[in-house]
Image (cartoon, rainbow, N blue to C red):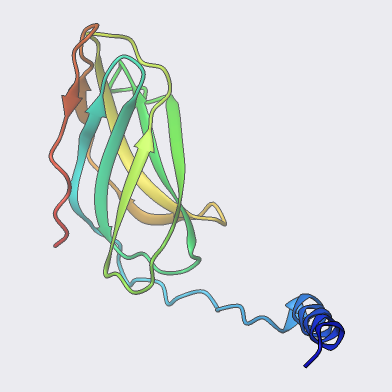
Length: 153
């Protein structure tokens, strides 16, 4: 094949690839929702230092929409958990469990915080499970707290 014909063939093939109909791409329906979502591990403080605080917990896979959010309600007063942090996660349908990690907003050093966790679908509806109130104390300047990695059940 001569160079001009080869170039023309490449242009035609790439044009067909680029103009394929994105509407024909298959979208998966939402996964079947779990009968009951349960926290199977945690919640616990995964890491804390002067600029980063992460709460981690594991649930059975909640199903439903692949887009989910881990949500932490926290404050220094266990009766008024008025701060909220949430993190987006994409569920992995092939896993029987889901690990949520949520980064909290600015926290003060050497301060005890109280928190509870939950999760929700992208529609804003709760997965129906909420932890008890837990607590942690943030490290002082230069100190770091790190928990061991989660072990799936």
